[in-house]
Image (cartoon, rainbow, N blue to C red):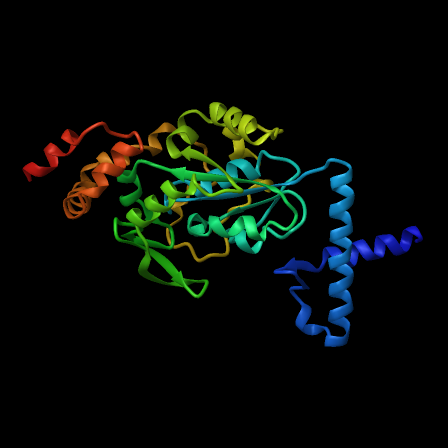
Length: 309
């Protein structure tokens, strides 16, 4: 086959994405059915042949899935990695891993609620990638006192529910998403899922020891960063997660492209959050157990001062 024809096939195939065993394009509805079918078969065959050739050459690919607590630091970690890791494709903003695992090559996604869909990934992993799940955890006192740039007048997540946009619209939100208890249970169960490698990353190590975190990820995932993740904010052209087009109402709550500092942790201690801490832990004593299990406390005496009000 001549070189021009091979190049043409590759260009066509890169514009058609494998999805659930079929090849579709973002503009596939513009093509008549009699054209879509042969193009699907051509693209499908191309990537399958590419997969076999890469395997014969001992070339393997990875899928990075970042998930965990909303307001826990998933966006920050996504930007730290996207700005520093070469050879991976990073979707802008958020994408579900289950909708991207089929794409060829090294790929990374970020969506907090993917913690509930990890068990689906092995079956969808048609290219036999190594799947690394970076589960972000954080002191839940900081989680439940955090606010979102799109809804700055509300605490974003509580023990029972969290705010979530309706039908992919960032203008309409409802307090019916998963809360801390449900998310924590899913995090605990994730380590038992076969076919994926789960690596816990704490928000505190992101901001207090980014160099140590970089070494940890390189060792556990077999990757090499070409840029220090502590300086991710300087590499703005490669930041994958941006609020520019998503109607953020309060830019002062956007930290995903700012320098990391230890002062970001422990904000729950501020007097303005006292009532929130009382209400959440008073209504749901299970939060104490989560704090202890995650290693942020060893007992409950820290709460004694809150009970005096």
